[in-house]
Image (cartoon, rainbow, N blue to C red; front, side):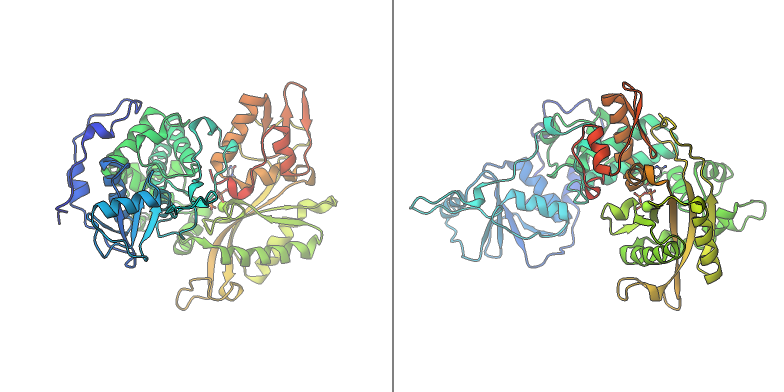
Length: 519
Ligand code: DCT
Ligand code: MG
């Protein structure tokens, strides 16, 4: 269905002075913009976007974006419109324009600043209209400054650090359309073991996640760090066409889809995926039914509990596991500190596993027996479906590893827990019919008390945040940071820390809360 009102956007309006070199590619904008019908998800709202002071290009882009997100957007102003969205116009300006158009505004009509629409685009749904969004209609008498005039100023590019550890990245990602694309491209590079391109896309995704606004034109990305030309081209294509041809190609690429499928099995990494792909396998059923293949214990468990493990862990499930972990740990070491780390500590609502850090302030000789005892107990209670206990190779006073992605040396247990459904807060878990439990991936890490702050910082993630913390330490501070310690190369000393705040302070960084580390 072709929208009769749709006008092709003049391309010269979209080009910006500094958008970097672009690949030539066939123009398919008209087709993609004009012919896509969109389902209306939010029936109660009828939007009209004012062109005045906004311009045709931006208006067309916003209309399309809003329609894609399920909003009803009218081309023409009519009685059915409930919300008028404008930019650089006061409420009085909009009313004046309505008068010129000989349209009488009803008192029900909402006059909103574009910042409201942009927040809605970020949230994927209508967000609450507050004073800062509502356009102010000036009266004849002087009024004190209205909150409506205090627009939140977007960060200037200069204020954005190239290091994720100097940015506050919450889960409120305003640029998901771009970051999803970059994450697919980064993953594809990971599958092809192309480290440098992986970093280009991973860093681009990371910096966009920290922006407090949605990118709607190339103007807004000028000066933002970590966006190489390759990344800018992708952004430009998405702004213009609503999608990236490169991402589309990756998503239908046989190698990518096979690797994605194979690595979704617990215990299957890149090497095994490569082997299976070269052998011509394309589905898990082909692999499972091939008699000649030998699987590790981990992979056998991965196939056995596949359905449970690919379905994400909910917070309610994570909390239920947490209770069981604490119960078991405190049976043997009552003063132990048990902290849920990983994505759940960063506030995520779902995860692929549940990570825990365990430490004891009262060092006891048989501290290294704790995980063994917990495993034994769960084994007897029938709560363990799989485990792999890795002994510690930790050495005190060792200078940290220079490798940004180095694994740590703590004692750990990677396991699959059999979580009884009755332990999950009722109503918060999706129970499969007839099943009384769910297989959940759990990582337990036991660390000596003196390095618990470093271990906590390291195991909280995100991976990109950790990578940049280490890069920042070495490039900007001549220090080496890992999950065990922080070493000052200039002073040649190991810096002690009791808390994460102290580590940030040693590094000369403002403290970033766990929920701001979703880089
Ligand atoms: N970590 C790390 N280096 C590794 C593995 C993990 O620094 N080689 C850190 C970063 C995140 C944290 O440990 C937990 O790892 P995951 O569970 O893989 O990540 P997550 O952020 O918890 O993500 P998910 O929600 O998918 O579990
Ligand atoms: Mg995790």
